[in-house]
Length: 291
Image (cartoon, rainbow, N blue to C red):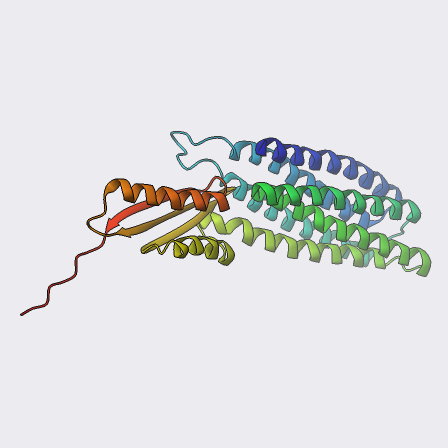
């Protein structure tokens, strides 16, 4: 069910981006607007991101195997890094084209049609991004979250381009078009840096964030667990915890095992699918005082 929700959301993103790219390219050529063309490029990246997300969520849900004993979750983080780098390249190209238009001048045509397409694009992407965010939160998918971030940025830039085209139409200032395109590029650059940092961190086995770690420690403290060497990490939608739990030297193996099973069950109720490894360790006997 979880897998179907993820692939379904990714497929919806592919379909919507394909339609919007076609519209933007046609209107961009007809109007000669570099800001609309820049939005077409942005949507093309959204499509690439959606395809990458679709492939990665399918791979990431494959069960662990001989060569990948911890599963395939990190493929989602790799896809996020690739998407971020693609955005950087596109932003640089948009800035180059905008500067060229400023230097040599340009004429913008079919402004009402351009505004209509930009507004429609913003509305469609607003709906799809909400679906992706909701699914990403429910499944913990980094790939879908990255795709949703792309579309969220596209919503803002689409409405911004529509407003800019309206200003050009009413104020008769064609040089606003490349300026708007550069503002779109700057926004995309900011988006790509945020995505790159978030996607890359788990590849370095970064631990849980502060709130997740607080929830783990709350479970341990509620049961007055004597522990040390607590370590956490994430791999795509998967989470891992390992720690050493200290027991009295006269505790039986059965009682220690039952107690760690109780802890694991509570942690799994908070983080579904989490992998918990606990090393049962006897408490060292107190040192005898020298006479």
